Image (cartoon, rainbow, N blue to C red):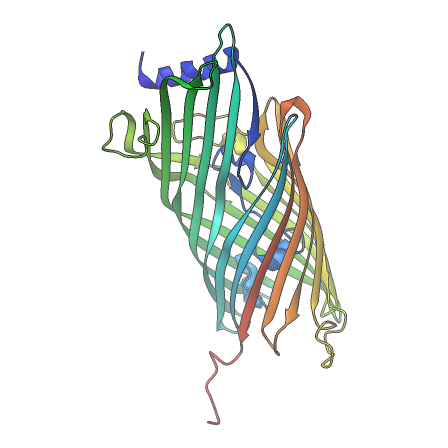
Amino acid sequence: MSITNKIRFLGVLCTFFITSHAFPQSSASTYSALGLGEFNNSGLIQNQGMGGLGISFGTGWGPNYMNPALSTRNTIFNFQAALNYKRTNVTSSTDQETIDGGGLSYVALSFPVKSGKRTFGMGLGQISSVSYSILVKGEVNNSDFTSINRVEGSGGISEAYLSYGFVLAKNLSLGIHASYLFGSTIRTNQLALLNPEEAEFGFQTEYYERLTVSDVTFKGGVHYYFKTGNKSNLHLGATYNAFGDINGKEFAKIADFGQASKPDSDGDILRNNEKGTIFIPGNLGYGISYEKINKFVIGLEAQMQNFSQYRSFSGVQGELGDTYRVALGGQLIPNFSTVSNIFKRSTIRFGIEYQQTPFILNQTQISDIGINFGASVPINSLSLMNFAVKVGSRGTLNNGLIKEDYFSFTLGFSLNDNTWFYKRVFE
């Protein structure tokens, strides 16, 4: 029997002969153990405050990441960066634990090539993230032994991107967003047996797997707006992110505890940086927004991705389900023209988003719902301090699954300057 078949056989044995309970230890999301982890489809901080709204509407006060066609609204230089923090209360049928974590969310900038006509942008961000630690402990039937199985994962896929937007015709703009995908996802699985005295018995094995991706992908966008009054517009937007076959390589090894990640240690190498591809289905997004200029915006948007077509590096297909996300959100400015009160000039955002995630466990597809709000507070005449908050819930306790109630906070700033690309007349 080959090593791969032995691993599969061991998994079957664990399923049928070990009565166990599982609980998370330290993860951003336990469900990121599936597929390529949790995808970021909610955009930058100004989008997050509106439930992820940003395909049909964008402002000139920050880079327009979600729809590159909207970057034509950036008539001045924009630089934006943000940090994020997330706290999750994870509950199973038997246990409960609180976990947290955070870090740099993204860096982005845009500047006009020709103000109001053509705009160029670039940035660094996260496409997907993997972070979980699960401990499965149970009795081996018809024996006095106990099994301990610790499964952990980390990493994700990042992107470095360039974007370009241009006005094609009156009220109509197009854009393209080219990304270089890079990064690694690392997964380990440690299995040990304990005798009745809680001492380790027999051998302890560790399975280590590192998938590294390196490829280029493209996203296209279109934006059109109608004048509905002297100071109001109706915006339409659509995007398509064409992922497809993504090149990568994989290293996988089984060995003793702590040795599987070392290529030169004893053990069995299953894949030694073997080249191959994973298939990520394209993401289609579209939406509509109504804008009262310098007053308020409200919009409705949706994204769809057929993750049932996802194919892993090993060629397995059908482990994930089709996903969609719906965002209803908006923003308002109490008094755009006031000078004395910066809070009345601040932009206040709100939104709600619902997502059917691609994760399927025990014949149950996991859903996620969140309530969002945020704001942009002027620092000076052009630059802003931004924040976004989301309170949400993912998963269910039914069918022996795990429920995650979470709170996330993103804090950042926008540095805007309208002098970079204009010639000085007076010194």
